[in-house]
Length: 162
Image 1 (cartoon, helix red, strand yellow):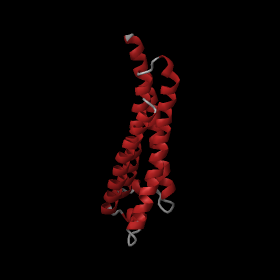
Image 2 (tube, one colour):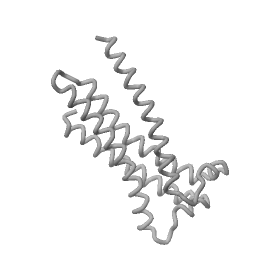
Image 3 (cartoon, rainbow, N blue to C red):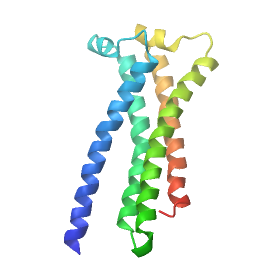
Image 4 (spheres, rainbow, N blue to C red):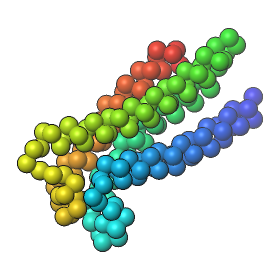
């Protein structure tokens, strides 16, 4: 039985690794789509800390939510019993996918709502100028949204009995 648990742990580690890479890719792509007038990598090469802060916050926010989904999926796999096998796997996968989708939507909404609230500030223009104060506020909003969405995603586990 210990070998089976070790094998399951290794599978979970591999799945988590691929999801981590995927989430980083999604975060970078999302930021790239939101900042059409900003070449993120050129700004980072120039040492633009503000751009780096916001990009990091997007990745952390997505990772926070994805972590909750991975915990639900791995919890489902580890607690499989007889008839609940298929439902546990499906529930864990649904929780993970919904969590990632909700994180992406939430980040997009958070940035757009922040933009509407701060009518006198063009956040992306400020990031391009290297305005760290704007970047820190944006990062705080993004990370807070990630924590809040994480709690919602964890609630999905309960709905599926995971």
